[in-house]
Image (cartoon, rainbow, N blue to C red):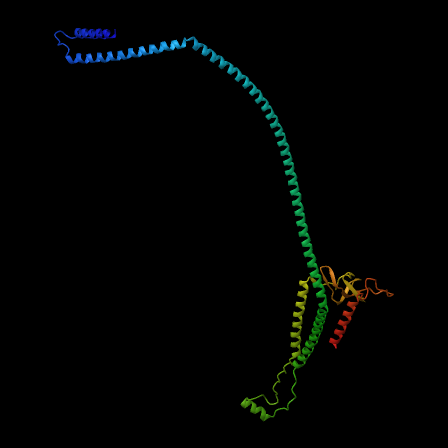
Length: 374
């Protein structure tokens, strides 16, 4: 049928070509028909393949319809579907049981988690309390350590101050042993100055006597010839006039120079003594012209001087020394007392030498001064 259709189509196309071709046109060439024949053959082969394929498909369709419409197959399918439905119901029941079990497990897990959370909260709270207690304990320990360190520093400072006070006291005691030597040195200076003043006064008197001019003895009156000879020659002095005598040089006292050098040496030694005492914080007690203070002064004598208030120290018999408010030796003084009609006993605070060691030092110094003056 298809081949006839193709031949009719070919004839129709040839007729159209003839109608469309002008009159007197040449017929189509042989190659055209050969090509057209080949195309028709290929189309015929293609149609044959299509027919073969459609017949094979129709056979498969018939076999499939037979297979699908087979009652045994339908029963097998029904049985299989029943088995699947039963399995699905069983699986659904198992899944429900599993879901119930899972829900129970989840509830148990939730309860366990809640319990674990409560336990964790308690443990965290306990840990925080423990950390706070540890922090408080550490703070207390640090405070105790700081207090102990401060106490140790204060104790060390107190020990240092105590050691310094003991050293100063020892220096004061050591310096007190040298105070009699300083007293003797000052007495020697006073004696030397007095001796130097006397020697200077004696030297000044001797110099004044030596500087007084000496009047020459009267010479005899010159004669006329002597006066003429002096007028002619003009040599020498006029007759009867004596040459003025030069004043005799004042005698040089070598003892004054020796005394001055000796006193300068004593001054240097005294200055050195006072410097050492000042390094140990030992200073003289101010007494002369001050009101009598029994805590610093020791009254040995009472004097009566007009124009001086009562109870004022008018003379220092021996210097006193103190170190940072501690009296190393009392100042032995003479106190002014206004004269009264009846002699009154000295007050209790003016006791003569209440300390035996000071009395002995004073007696020794008096003996030394008397021996030096002699």
